[in-house]
Image (cartoon, rainbow, N blue to C red; front, top):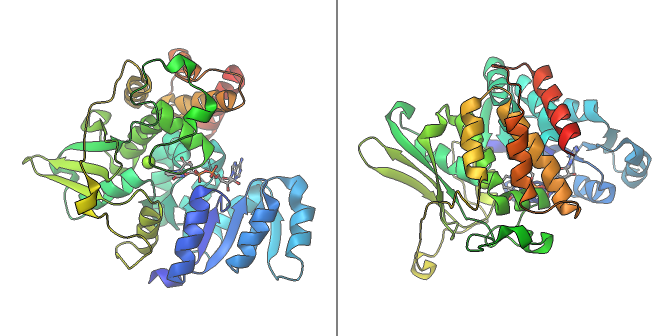
Length: 378
Ligand code: NAD
Ligand code: MG
């Protein structure tokens, strides 16, 4: 089946990844079946009309009448609520689902898409961190495929293609280092400073995660889940230019890398067109103008998130879900001006310290741990 025959469901169509996905789909002539958003009803209606979608789902139920009004006469069905979100992801007309909701809120729809055997293009990493083994098992049982959209994981996926995971020595997960790579005192940084990412333009939550390097912590677990490797096989390397999106070192000392401009349309497009690399809007980097590519170890003292991630990855069970929930509430508190930047680290550390763990938790246990952690640390 070609990518033009796989109609899309875009979960979180009004966000940063959602907008890039709509752009890629428009250029490649991929039909969009459904689009969803949480509360930005006018934007949702606009993108539903522009993409000629058949269904638009607004998460916030109070906005349904407005959505209906905005879509009147368009022939686009307006829906709302959690069940409608899952139904959109699992609809028979849909071939591929792009998960671009932010945070744990995307978990039910991710599971629904996996169970329905869709091509699951995952940008929304938090559900994979929380319930990775369940998502992967559901996709496998239903005969679907899981394709990474996260740029690092798309890079690793490409560096692994045609190779055996058993021959991998190390996965080198690159990080820009964020805006505070060279800032000595993180206790005084402001929301405004933290929202200025040096190389990528993204939604607010992941931008803060990139500043704390918690994004790399989530990505370490995401890599474990997607590629079936141990945490000790993944090394985080700071690469401020964001050109090498990640690398895989093999046992014979040879290293494969994937390079590109910092533009999410590249990994989004590859998830949609895999195994084909088709022409798209992003050009290859101009190597004569790149200047240097540099690499360094992360500073684990200033960024405790790195050690916390390896700790959570080794603990397994509920630890990744608890780490994620504590991080989500701490980031929300920081963005709202109720907490300091460094409180994000201490909140995650405290939550992991008080963890009552369970091996191989069920979805219900994961959701309960997520809710309890939020209630305790909000
Ligand atoms: P964003 O904040 O720009 O957009 C989030 C989208 O999710 C919006 O459409 C919003 O309506 C929807 N949403 C928010 N809360 C919701 C809820 N409770 N229920 C239903 N929908 C809800 O975020 P983003 O930067 O596009 O990131 C989306 C996901 O992709 C995140 O998990 C992020 O980690 C991941 N990701 C983003 C980038 C990037 O470049 N932005 C790169 C890699 C991975
Ligand atoms: Mg990433």
